[in-house]
Image (tube, rainbow, N blue to C red; front, side, top):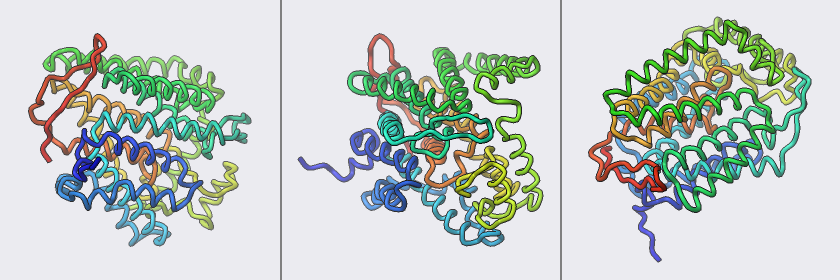
Length: 426
């Protein structure tokens, strides 16, 4: 059987390759520190050669991507004033190539295939962690927690969150049935067990929030587009008022106490304070992309020692915005925030104004998950990280304008599948 090369880069006709490529990419993101450069080369080999098949279809019009590349380009330019120019140049180029791969995936993979790859990839990552993982003693809160094959329970929890979310949207948004419904169920169970084993408060709370939000958006999307915005605005205002009431009534302390945490978030508030002070040294352009956590730099060494990071690597300020302003200043912070916020509101706009849009339903949930985590983790600022791959994949989809669908959307009800086909313009 001969397979057309063009089918490898045509969304909807490359399900087998696309599922495999996404799944293997997630495994590389999770364990490239373990497997080294060979795994990174494998990641590049999955996406970059597709350009040779049909570069116009695979790359598209990069003039539409200027807002997406803005932060990446600035991060590379920070080499000129970086405190560690060698590190900034190397990681800047890595981040740029990583974004290019994410955009190639965006151009060649449709959402059902992407979701299937997410289900398979997360299951592979978590099974590996369950088989070869270990427990870690946290000297800050005096507890043991399962970190899997990662160095942090929060990363294990992040993949578990993604596994639960992909399983949920596969069945309830995309209407998967048969073998992929079973796969979603198995992956969801593995993810739920891993989430509980990780004892990551961040991941548990964000998972509950994102599933609740997805259910709410399903209800809102059942209305006519003219009625959705009002209901969404009312729900958003109610949520804000409820959150403020919970905060002032001491509810946050109760929730944190349930996870064995205190109001300092296991030292994160002190770490944030240190990050803000570090940002004041160069508030406009920063000290250079990836140029703070360098062995031999006094402030980095001090914080590693205070937080018992004996490896003296793989640490950050546990806040995307503080990390960004320290490394790339207010300019870099603004550019990165623009990508994240535009992605969130871009897909929200589609959900509130289009008749039916399962693609944006899936990507909106991912964008919100990254937005919530951005206040306590750093998921979108590093190359070869699942968070940054997901962000730029979701952002890139906004550059593909929808035209008339060839058939009505079929949402999962009464056992029907959500098979659909939509024409896109580049």
